[in-house]
Image 1 (tube, rainbow, N blue to C red):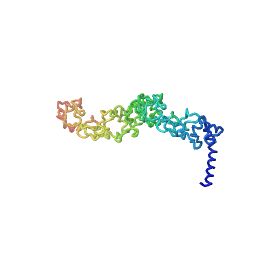
Image 2: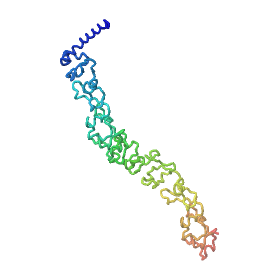
Image 3: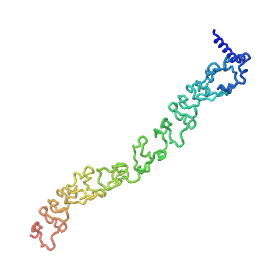
Image 4: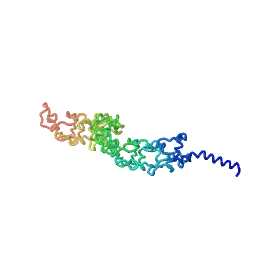
Length: 429
């Protein structure tokens, strides 16, 4: 061994004795603290706070080793130096200081943000409070609805709730049916959906009360401004299963028919309607539209424009043959009151004046084979052109001073019959 190396070993041994000597003597005398009573532990960067100041130096500085001692909780409390996290500890990160303090390990300020795993792993009613008996019936895990920062701040997931709405929404557990709610026997979910409470599938069948109790323009849409004027309640005409299926009650409608039956609001006068200035209700009745009280006075156009056998009854097959239009003879106020115009009648008088269709030859008529028109004229029936050639019987049967002019008082006395002396074609001859 060289002289230089020997001297180096002597110096190293000397330095070790200087540095380690006090520690070795401290161990021999009973502890590290006896020789470091004035030591400022805060100068190491790890001040002894709380319960750390109450433990012996040897609890952390094992075997008197002063250097390399861990400064984190987990470095000591999970590394065999000090008691670590127990098996029953909630699953969490190794940041002990997030919940515990050196001042007092218990109680602790629990920070769920550093807890790992589902809520139910702790909140099982044993390790920590679990779901209470009066909890809403649900298959959800706690964190599906609750947040750890504020347990009462609940995002309810209705999809996982079992039971009917009212089992919770009873006004106690959760908000119930409001006082202003529509009167109904429905359960909440008959109409509402949990994804959007204002999205309502309305079930009118279970609503009690009249339509107008809700359809008043405030709670729900009411009668529109352009509704037919009527004193009816909604359900007098409408049915809830199909609002456009209307059982119309004309009896309670105010105003004239045409105020609705104008071709827009309701069916109006059809294109083939009889031309007329009448309003609908002048002729029609609302109880039976086909029951028509006809007012001919307001009809425009000739009778035959309607009375053509199609639109209305036309000239019957047994009508007097005539080229007249209906109103040449008939009046609309009384069809049987006939102003007869013989000038337009075709055919012989007897075709009508046969005692059936019209008055025929009376029983006391002069016996004659003449046709009516041989002697009579239609313009003045009593103005007669007598055709004596066709008269049957003696002159005196008519010329008897009663039926026709008879033998005058100044006539020569004679027992002759008229035609013994007179000629019917020229009486004076």
